[in-house]
Image (cartoon, rainbow, N blue to C red):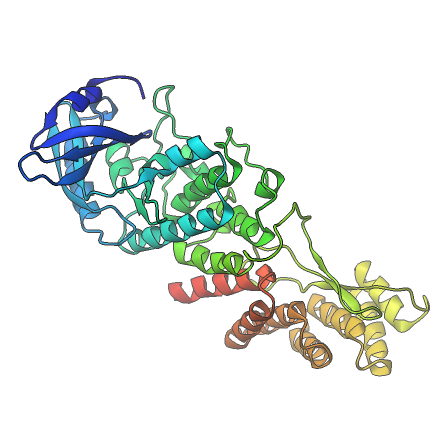
Length: 432
């Protein structure tokens, strides 16, 4: 931000407060440490430079937005004590908090540790969840407005400022007023909601993990730039950064639920770049399971596929049925795999493919029965439970489906497809 009228604050008293130093600056405002000479107390002052005030109605919007922001009371939100206007700038007086901005931390250290970022993300989500439930979107999340104490405690600042400056939420950028954390809908001037804040927060988290800011629209998979990030955390981040709002998490609470899976996996071996599907080995002679990509919608999704680990007689009904299924000949697959299941009633490979074939044929009750039979043989396979959950969901048995998704995730926190279905089901329940 260019030098301007706001810089005079560093040498002057703002009403009863003496500016003592700058904490951070971002596209919308600047944060200063200040003290009251008469009271001897410290505060933080957030200043909106007068050059950002574009229309005569700003003062009314500022009053309205700041009243709402001052109503927020949460341990991870820096509380607004009062606000005022001193020509040409507008400012807010906030509770004092002894912390440094996330922007300063990443500038000094580069990438931050994965456990620290998970901690900061979790606290930010709690703050956003509180604000969103009270009808307030942030609209201009920025590392400069996220303060972190030495013990890891975090505060968000800046609620209400974006809407006061630009009611259309476009936050027009200039060379002296950059804001690289816009959601796609925000960049187009479309209405924004909680999902836009989640996108912006996702970019901030990506930057903290990558050690550099996003470059335009280029945000590659985080594991390609930081091999310490586990796939579970990458999947959470990827869904926060989906371009279409309807495909993102809908609430901060949903992200927090998904993040708990990443926390549970944080003690495991560091993550590496992973393909679209992951493979979990099963005992020799049985089967391996290819997991479906995460991010499924609430609508029932096709079950995962089972593939053999070894070669068998090519003319067997099992192999012929599997081949028919892969080629899209679903009726033949159901018939041949049904015959194979009669001959091999305890083959997880056959029963899993039979369930998938029934599912493709929209015979959901039969699919659920096949997956249940497979689970009787291998109750430890979380992906079979995920398949069963999808079949039950397609039948309309939501409670039973939720129970199976929960069991799948409890059995294996890497089964994030099941976790995301739980998140989606919670979203549907909250809107009913």
